[in-house]
Image 1 (cartoon, rainbow, N blue to C red):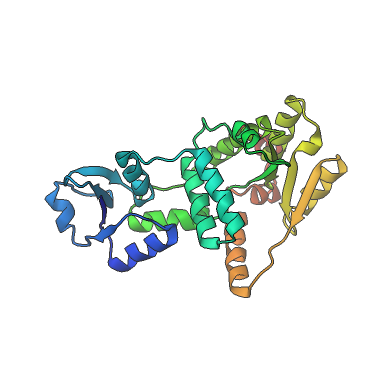
Image 2: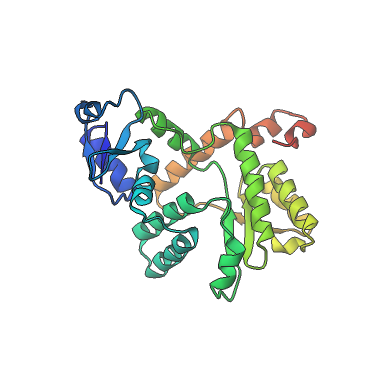
Length: 275
């Protein structure tokens, strides 16, 4: 099988390297190959099987998954998780990132994390850090630039709902995993506290994480109530640190940012409303 992308060689090469794609990708910036198959307009990527038939049409994010499905080579979430841990033990940064991306792609709502963690024979719970929106602007801009389907939620309420749903799934898997909820959103934090208590679990089973300088008030409020809190700050090279700063500025100056809404005087009822 081969994937045909309607982008320049440079754009295709950058995408293949960034996402560590393993299937061959051909460039068709003039659309001559794609047009020969009767394909018009978007999407940008088509997968052609060995019989010369179109096996997939869509964004490049799902092309490799389509190839695996067509060839009967699909992997389970459990095997992806094991591959991720194996990559971590090898201390191979590139392989670890690729394995993590595969895990995110292959982890549907039916994946029983608690059952897997229990069968893995781990001596200690697996700490899972739940965070949202870290690279939202970059992902949206890149997708729109190339005419791809956006890989992230574009409506904040949808992201918040999904965050709460994943929080409950992590809490349901307590014992096998330890949830670490990273958010400055009071609604998201309160939902995690309520869900954990509703499950009959002690407050210490959930850790809350805040960024120093942005979540100080929240940190003190949570700690004063006996909740487990971790405060973190970025450490690293200047260039990487500047990129991190820009992401934080974009996140916290957005009109929909919880911190920005809180600072502007939005009522507590609105801030804590269900997404």
